[in-house]
Length: 287
Ligand SMILES: [Zn+2]
Image (cartoon, protein in one colour):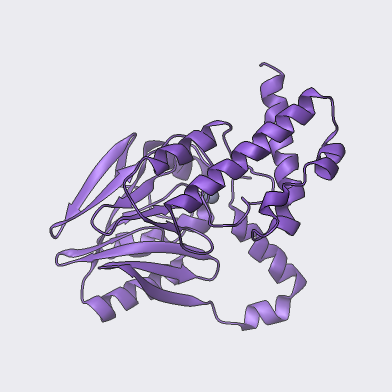
């Protein structure tokens, strides 16, 4: 399962291969922006996480990598004067959760899905092993504030946790929902059709603002749009497979025109079809 590395990490690696000098010389793009109330979004290049400031400390999410985590730890202390008490890993993929040891060594308690802990240990992910795990849901309370941690079923991973901030009306969801942007390349480490069910469960949560792990912020309507994109892709690839079409024919005929304005449409449409065709072929074998 060593191939279970994430998406944008590969994009960055390819980018570095193409433009080694410019990529290595440019400093990482990091930023902290307010989402709502005491909830903030943390950017490290193409990866995003969130954190909630309370009077008794901070609840943070994906560390992204050790250098980014050190930067965030220092910035949170400097700007808010509070230590990071909890860190919640979204899922086990290294490009989001590397560097957790920075927070653990500073005294934070690490939380993840039970299967994420197994994958972190099994795959030797470069991060701190979770202190607390759960399977379905968990409420985290600190300084009079609450965060609901919810496992919405298998999607881009089988150990994904969604963070719901009820007072701020925000959901943080990583790698399985994005805003007007195609899912990453060939949909590796994915579960179909459960992925669409998982988004439908997110839509049942009472929230307004969607903060994804990559790309632009959005709303609950963007989550529904992403689910419909995947449903359309699934239905059209399944129909083509049943009609005996080859993957090359599918890529020529399944144009997904309604999504031509989305980010990565040109780059990833063909690979999305290829990946979905592979998933569907597995199901159709009936094993
Ligand atoms: Zn991932």
